[in-house]
Amino acid sequence: MPKWPGQAIMAFENLTQRLSKTLKNLTGQGKIREEDLQASLREIRLALLEADVSYSTVKKFIDQIRQKAKGQEILEGLNGAQQVIKIVNDELTALMGDEAVPLNKSEKIPTIIMMAGLQGAGKTTTIAKLAYKLKRENNARPLLIAADVYRPAAIDQLEILGKDLDVPVFSQGTDVDPREIVKAGLAQAKENKNDYVLIDTAGRLQIDAELMAELKDIETIAQPDEVLLTVDAMTGQNATETAQGFANELNLTGVVLTKLDGDTRGGAALSIRDVTGKPIKFVGQGEKPTDLDVFYPDRMASRILGMGDMLTFIEKAQQEVDEKKQAEQLEKMRLNTFDFNDFIDQLHQVQNMGPMEDLLKMIPGMAGNPALANLQIDDKQFAHMEAIISSMTKAEREDPDLLNPSRRRRLAAGAGRPIVEVNKMIKQFDQMRKMMNQASNGNFSGMESMMGQTGMDMSQMMGGMGGGMPSGNFGQKVQNFAMKQAARKMKKLKKKRGKK
Image (cartoon, rainbow, N blue to C red; front, side, top):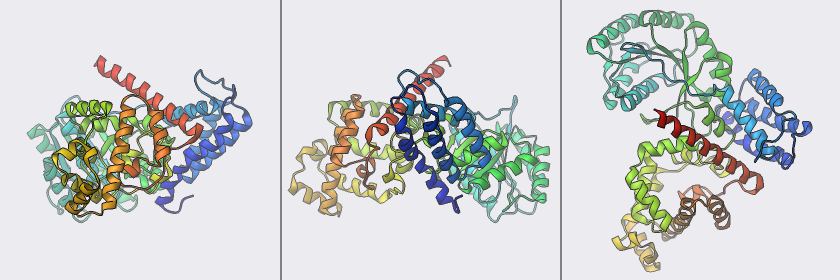
């Protein structure tokens, strides 16, 4: 078992690589042979255990796959390896709850949400993010109640967050009993006609009788529609044990997994749902107010299998990107007239979507890329690129072909950057423009081929480490399978939205 969170994070990085090794033997077979299936399941089992997923969950999961896969005919259009991936993907999704579970909502206002959890799990930050999400997406009028009177500066933290997000906070200081604070806060919410009330409760370093007694009293007073448990995903099996402890004492309705960065990849999510039976409703990753997402089991399954998460990637883009400007830029990509002005616009839009290393892992085929395992893209790199482009004349931005050696030396001097860096950025821009042109015309295989020939990948393009997309027959098939899965889901999503 991992000894510290970092190991748990890295363990799932091996899952795709292990699958690619063991499933190659299945390619081209009409049925999945028992000996090949056992080898595949052994690798999956080891990867899950090393990721700190509970033993009981792993055993149950492996048994389900074995029953589904044994002797199963290969579906049309899929080889043996892809069939096992499909079964594993389906079972992972089922294990985590099949579909996203929405927040409970009261028939009459306010809807009351009580947040519980241990100290350090991120309750206060999460409750502010959730209030902001409700305000931004539902035009809600939330009220935050500061009922954690024990942790130093907990009330101050919530008040600062509330002020930054323009969300009102009800507090009475640290000398008032939390139960009385909740009563008074609910009365104010009723008077002000707030449609959501979110209660920030106290935590401890570990579960104890005094903490649970207070939380039970608050639950009785508030009669919440939601009792959400905030759990730190980085703590591995401890996250599962914490969730089970709270579920035994409170009427939990759901879980929020925090600190679920792009590398954690679902270990805690697998165990928590299985052990407690409570749905994971949200996941938090990052410090920005917008870094709280609805938990989609099918998308998390895709991430775990290294197939990316194109739907979330697309949704993030839709939230942050100017659609009219994006349409113009896509047409420029298709015609290969994309210039440095467009590049700067793209750069700003991508920065608004979140950390680059997390976005890259949402792209099919990129999650298992060893070059991305420890990728850290410094914000200064974006600033340096922008400084170089700002040193260009209007004509040079619109026509990159004008950038001869003497002009490049002038750019280096103007931006205060080495000439090598200027040359590298221009070369990567040219390669990126060619790839964008191919991708916009539907040629993904050509894009990968070009990346292999030039030795360039997405991380290099943004100033990161070297490496490349997963290569070889199996890597290509996994990417194709992931793209098809994403396309099917997008069609379903569009139909669902159309009906509404």
